[in-house]
Image 1 (cartoon, rainbow, N blue to C red):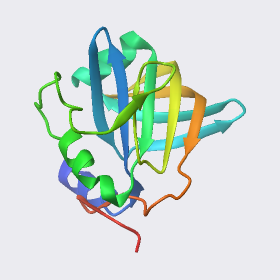
Image 2: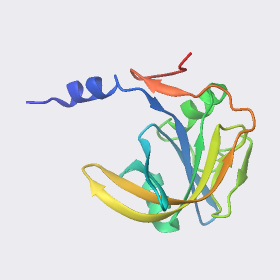
Image 3: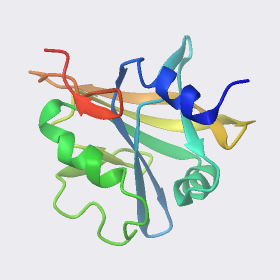
Image 4: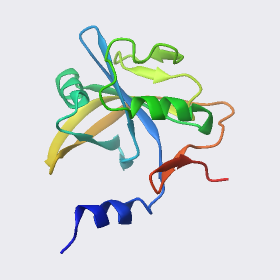
Length: 160
């Protein structure tokens, strides 16, 4: 039988890129750190991200139908740490983080490797998470991208 602990340990051995996923609901910005993000399709351009059902971000993305994705550099590690902190306040959580808004209204972090402005096309229940499938409407690539922030064995780091 597979234990939850063994499951976490096994999958922690798979390195993954780190992104900040954002959404705007009403007058509030919501954001979370994610390492479960991947491409789904080239035509149309689709990505997926997994969002915990109990997280307040889940309601925001479900109701707004839009999300922003910022692929992080190693220089943005503090943002990843902060936006992965459970219970942080909604109001002001993005203060001190340079950003702009995509056409969807979602926050996109300045200085990222790339940003993707998206709209949600499907949400699928999957255990204690939902798989959010989003179509990419706009992409901005960094002119001089830094080193990618990765998540491996429960720690943020780099490939170098």
